[in-house]
Amino acid sequence: MLAVERVGKTYPNGVHALDGVSFSVGPGEIVAIVGGSGCGKSTLLRAISGLDTPSQGRVLLDGTAVTSPHEKIGIIFQEPRLLPWLTVAGNVGFGLEGRPRRERGERVADALARVGLTDKANMWPRELSGGQAQRVAIARALVPRPEVLLLDEPFSALDAFTRIDLQDHLLDLWADLRPTLILVTHDVDEAIVLADRIMVMRPRPGRIFEEIEADLPRPRDRQSAAFDFVKRRVLAALDRSVERAKRIDDSETKADAGAALWW
Amino acid sequence: MTLVHMSVAIEPASVEQKRPKTAFARFARPALGLVLPVALAILWELAVRAGFSDGRLVPPPSRIYAEFAELARSGELLRHVVATLLRVAVGFGFGTVVGTVLGAIAGYSTLVRRLIDPSLQGLRAVPSIAWIPLFILWLGIFETSKVALIAVGVFFPIYLGVLGAVMSVDRKIVEVGRVFRLSGTQMVRRILLPAVLPSYVVALRSGLGLGWMFVIAAEFMGASEGLGYLLIDGQQLGKPTEIVAAILAFAVLGKTTDWMIVGVTAPFLRWEDRFNARAGES
Image (cartoon, rainbow over all chains, first blue to last red; front, side, top):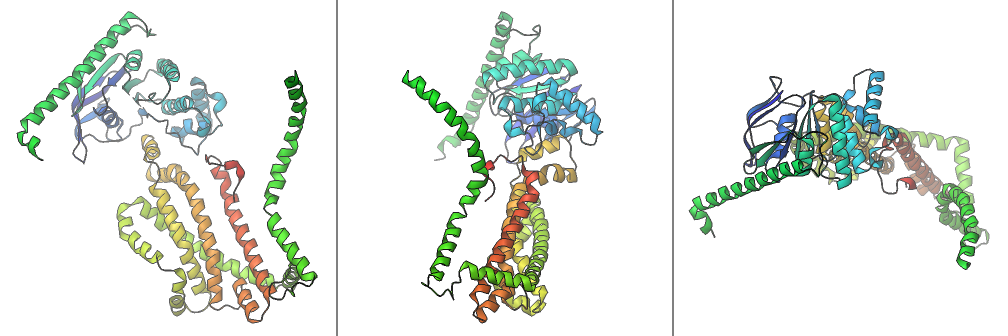
């Protein structure tokens, strides 16, 4: 059980990126966080991962506070971030150092087989395509068997075909281990294909604007009416979130009457 | 019709061309670089033999070779080479260790960088040869001052190279290390060291080049043995063959030691995605 309690983040340069975000995610649940750019999605994910510490509030995993990267929390970034000096197998096994050589070899081989890259084990990362590299990154994050896997716009840099392929692939992998998935994305289709619950954020400061259940049967048909229905709801919520932010902006400018006359 | 004929005719020829081409690439292409110096040497040799020049100030290859053989036979060459090599080795060793340590610390810690980097950059602006009088006063005229000068020359490129390499390590890659909860030493060993290795090799190579440069300066300032001594000796006794022989020895030693650095580090750098990686080192 992962709980986010009133998490806020103000950067040293004064940017108020997050404000009072609270939610909890059960084991094996898939949650998508959507929102326009600059609404603090990545900041929130980095706070959950322990890479950044929130300015207010806290993140709890099974009751203990997460203050630094945690062994049960894995993260996949927008870029594969493979280490260029390690082979594909070396990258996948990066988090297993210190374990017996045989166990490491088996788990790496197993993970590579799951992402369908067994034949690429001895290649260098530079020899992989973008989709293959991201699959290696997924394998690397899954090998230590995390309870929570965070994904920060993991497929946004890939072409549409590869993206759909990897979304399905991710679901297969999830079905094996059933980790909690928290996915940040700006692709509404991706959110609905993957998630049980979609959280729409609104910007300045980043807050959760609306929560939408997406309890469609799996595997999900991207063409179905139910899919379309959820998609409309998410898009409408996104629309409203931006509208409201704009209105708040307006009122802020108006409130500061002298500001318009500064020149 | 004619097109088909042509393509059929061309095909076997192009297939056959492939095999000699790879052999050519292996042996003939590096040899291409030898054409110019060898041709010049032969031309000069012929010119001297034909009597166009007496070759006293610019000795022809045969005389240089004879001088070289004589130096080698008498054991003089070995004595001078060993003396020079030792100085370079010790100076390079000290310069590398200090440059690497200071560069790494200054790259890692902003505070240390702000403390020491301006002073070091200021010292770097001093031409290293300018230290010679001071080193002689401080350290005497024997080995210590020579080694110190070489070490100073080697220090700066290595310090700068390591500093720049550590500072430019990709934050995103370091973050991967943090996600996997690497400790400080693990972070250095598994992320920082491999990440800086390519630029470190470049720094070592330029440091070594400067080491060879400064060993001559050091030996010019008064030595009884070493290749630099041989140069001065040849000048004072009016023996250009000895000078050219010493220069050749420098060239061979410099290139060989550079190759050694490249050769030793190459297995660790196979992953590099370099432009022209196949064309080999220059």
